Amino acid sequence: MDISIIIPLLNESESLAQLHDWIVQTLEKEKYSFEIIFIDDGSSDSSWELISSLSQQHKNTHGIQFSKNFGKSQALHAGFIKAKGEYVVTMDADLQDSPEEIPSMIAQLKNKDLDLISGWKKKRYDSILFKNLPSKLFNWAARRLSGIKLHDFNCGLKVYKKEVVKNIQVIGEMHRYIPVIAAHEGFDKIEEKIVQHQARKFGKTKFGADRFLNGFLDLITLWFINGFGKRPMHFFGFWGTLMLIVGFGFTLYLGIDKLYFNTQSRLITQRPEFYIALTTMILGAQSFIAGFLGEILIRHNKNIKRYNITNTTYE
Image (cartoon, rainbow, N blue to C red; front, side):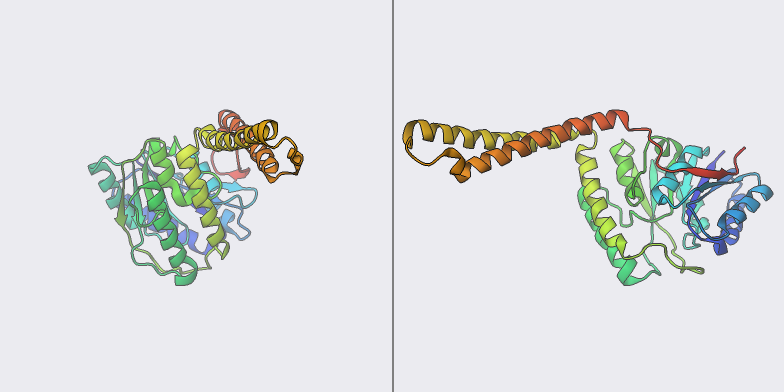
C-alpha cells in the first residue's frame, strides 16, 4: 500500500462525506493505492455512524472510535499503530486541509529522501487573536528550543515515512511538536511545504482559550524531554548535587564556627544558616529521588495505553 491517511476528528459529521470524496478523487487520479483511517475522538454527533457507513461502502476506509475524548495526540497514536502505507499522511477533518497537496508533498519527500514533510499554512483563515497569534508565538519558541526551522509546527497536514510513525510516541498534547519528537528519535531530515489553508465550512474550532496555557506547558515539557527525556537523572542529579554541596557547605561552616570561633554564641538552631543548610539538603535529596523515579518510569512505562477504543471497522 502506498499511502495511509489518518484523520482524527471530534464532532465533524457535516464535513466527513465531502472530505472522503475529495481524498478518493485526488488519490485515485494519481493512481495511488491507499487507505483512509478516521479516528473518532469521542464525538457526540453522528460522526461514527457516517464513518461506519463509509467503511461499509469502501473497503479501503476504516474507523476507530474512542470511548470518550482522549485528545488529538492519542488519536494520532492509534492511527499510527494501524497504518500500513509506505507513506503516512495526517490531516484534519474540518476541510481546512486540502488533499490535493498530498501528491506534491510525497514527491518532495521522495526526491529529497526526507523523513517528514510538514505543511506551512502561510496564509491562514483563522481567528487572529485565538489561533494566529498563539501559533506564531509557539512556533517561534519551538524553533528556538528545537533548532528545527519550521514555520508551522502545528499544521495538521504532514507526510511521514512509515518507519517514522512506527518509532515515535505521541502523548499528552504533544501533537503540536511531532517534528521535534521525530528529530529526537533520529528522524531529522525534515522540511516544510507551503500549503493552501481553507476557511472552515462547518462547525467551529475545538480549541479554546486554554490553548494558551496548554501551549506554554507543552513548551516546557518539550524542552525537558528534548534535553533530558532519556536521562532524567542528569537533570535532577545536577540540581540535587548543587543543593547538597550548598547544604554541606553551610553545615561545615556552622560546625567550625561554633567549635573554634564563637563557642559562647547562640545555639546553631537559632542561626539562619542552619535552616538554609537543612532546606538545601532536603531539596537535594528529593531531587535525587525524583531522578531515580524518572529513570525507573522510563524503563517500565513505555507501552502504557492512554486511550480506550469502543468500536472499530477493522476485521
